[in-house]
Length: 130
Figure 1 (cartoon, helix red, strand yellow):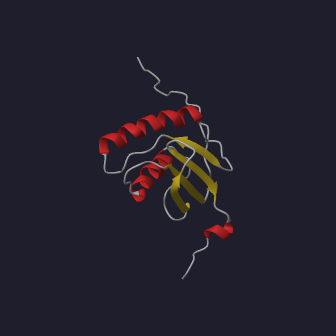
Figure 2: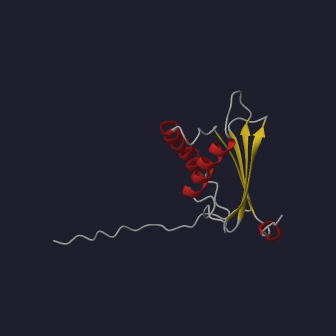
Figure 3: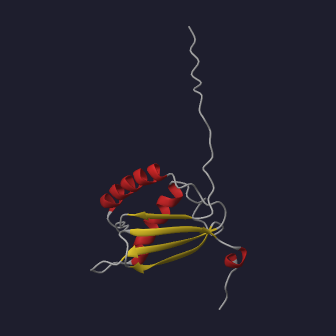
């Protein structure tokens, strides 16, 4: 007796967008491994529900973190968000050909982190020399 193990799979591409704007809960530092894994799982659930699509080609990423009391290193908060976006195909990768610009800062009036992914225009992809 032979069984056919071919399973039909519907193949769909992610819908391309002009820009993506998201708000997620505040990410832990890259140094807190267990908390980071929990944050990734919760954020993955949010992204699965929202189905935000993707921004193809070169992008610029703007991250605005909730202003909180205490000392926080901004550079330790950027990496988890970038990794999450790449893992869930919001943009193509974090290499220099795709992720052309990252802006990060502190803000008030929102909770967690506000993420904006926009296409990088031709003028934005040039290399600046000092």
